[in-house]
Length: 325
Image 1 (cartoon, rainbow, N blue to C red):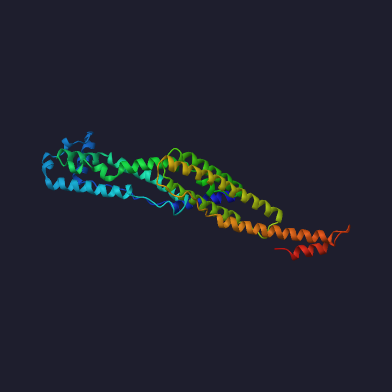
Image 2 (tube, helix red, strand yellow):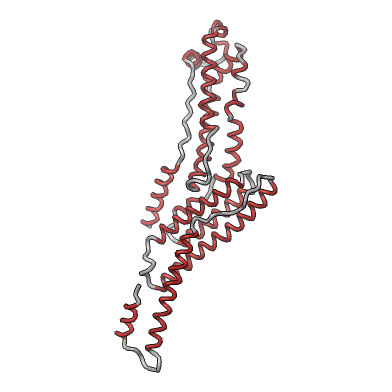
């Protein structure tokens, strides 16, 4: 239980470290607009152009300032809408958290744009016939395209069960987590146009997470000093988890090829570089070494006990000690 709690705490700290900061957009409001909206609220009125001093609607200095504010909003919003990340770098959680954070950031921007202060600013510019500052505003911000992209991608990202892997404290849970992850990945990838060119490096990021979690779990035991029966059981269980990866990755690769054809996406080789492959190879070598060592030891003991007699127990112990790893 304590180990599970520590794993959960470690996972929480990891998420804090891996969250990519999305700029917090704060849109500047002209003081005259702020005062007008504040006065309307005190009177219980809905802010509108009619509450503004009529002279301001023809004051080029004031209108230029408002137009400058709007241009500033566009630049601030573009700092979010033009953001992207390389899915081939970092972890699975970073890709997931990036798009979920993007959705929250875009929602906050939309809330600001719906505020009385922003609406009144735009209405004043429209009333003053400064249409070039308002007509293309939303197009220039890129909000529509960014919002649609984020919504599509988050069909995949929401409820992505990567935490099942990152919090796993034994090989059995790792194996189950791999199955859960690919079940979600494959199912959702069919429903959303998340590009195959991003999906492949995301699968490789899952492999990196798998490697790290296997190394962490196996790092708690001394493979060369374990009782052979326990060692053999652990290795076979680990091989089972790796075979689970291979079968799921194969199914994913088949889907990726199918989607590339259906969506007419640019052809790319469908190949997943498994980051855990070197660990798998080292584990195979250690298992083979210990297996041969165990067979040699058993052969020597068997030879010593042949002929109907029994070998001296101290001699057998000496053999075991001599071949102790």
